[in-house]
Image (cartoon, rainbow, N blue to C red; front, side, top):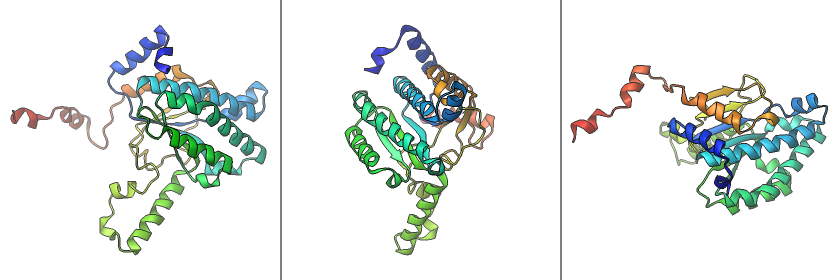
Length: 269
């Protein structure tokens, strides 16, 4: 089990992070820079993506050990279908390899696998592997690992609006019934909380169409490191930075401080 693999130093680091008392419930990661990493190493882009899998393996393991509840990885966007055919085929092969090789270990460590995106566009063999992995891990209660595949935030919002419009037209709903909460229930992410922390590697300063609705109040951490170089020590750095932030959700700092004390509980004792 992964918890038994922690070194003494790593155990102390994770304990220190947990003791800060402010772990995010949901982390999203834009795993950027595989191609640039490969070019700097004089390797093919495929080799960059393959090395990126090692980062996925380490970050998933560390997140599980820390007790993170939800981790969503931007694995393949709808826009990525426009890349060269050889690169797309290589990415699909690596995804298939990852699922075949890792699913049993993920299951043994209570990781639940989910996916969001237009997965019907994926190769049939990958679709079947995804289905099998999701079914195998469905009842697990540990980390929920969501792979965003053939995904885009705008696509999911438009898809949700189409389904919602059909329900209005059929009489199941009236326009007055539509609230933020109702709309969110039509998104593919309806079973997970909004993103607390978004990590982006490679230094780029954009969301790239990832979890647009869910990132309304998410904190963003940017690192110059390319994804194949990103490991658990870098995740720890992001979590420590996150623990220092004040999340106000539109309120003032004073209101946030006052909200920490529920005086009604005192008066009703």
